[in-house]
Length: 193
Image 1 (cartoon, rainbow, N blue to C red):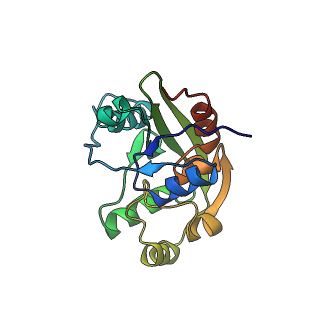
Image 2: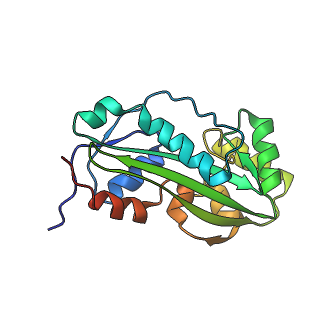
């Protein structure tokens, strides 16, 4: 019988992260706190995701000290050295999708898992390639899916993922927002004391 750790708090409002963690067999509570997601400009791409995930975890000291395991995550989309955040509006979403059209980009998700005695921060990187997207397809996607809460202005599990992605190198679930296989193995090794 698998023994899953208890007292897990997922510090994410993302329904996709919640679904993935649930499907991996974990019971958890969701607790979201507002955290400043800006970062120092000298950080490299992978460092940015880990910096933000760590900053989120730092907001949960009280919960960790009370015996809980906290999971925080941050996903960024990168084309070259440029980081594409969440789109503020339709124009930004359109500009981002045009940058991704016909090219490969990196999706980096950093995760922090923290308990009283253990701390594990890591990142996973996946390369995603889009075929050329027409202006009409970009407009249709933005109109139907409103991807304003997603890094890079797209969700791989939505219409655009079905019709526009030609290849993925790395974890699909990482692009959804949580590298589940790695989160699972690290969580299962945590001692909840």
